[in-house]
Image (cartoon, rainbow, N blue to C red):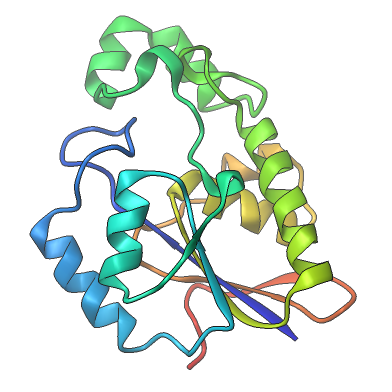
Length: 185
């Protein structure tokens, strides 16, 4: 059985639409504590962002960079807070929160993110076994759950992923399943 544990990096302080900031000291402490409960893994991957690299290091993982684990591109919204965008582009936020095809700030839609993560998960099935840990972001973790349950991207609009709370997905040679909100150790 293949076990995929996805861990989302926390967001930068005050900035919802960015993965370039550094982890806060408290997040690093929480990650180091989490690392003690994670099972040994056959391989590990990380998103190509600063925060994912910091989180992988805090989890004591030697992870390979995987472009499919990148958070969605938020286009013109990058680096801004939700409050700022609500003032600047309220109709854009409304579309993004209700339509998986909407491209936030002209960036990447949830539908496209689900497709990219789904292709990566299928590559894992053909080339991996054991436990894999993936350090990424909320969006790709949400997309992985959508793919595991065989849902449409619109389901992803109703899934919340909490940073630093592992998401466990398994593949039993026939199908993916969303097993729990955390790893079984």
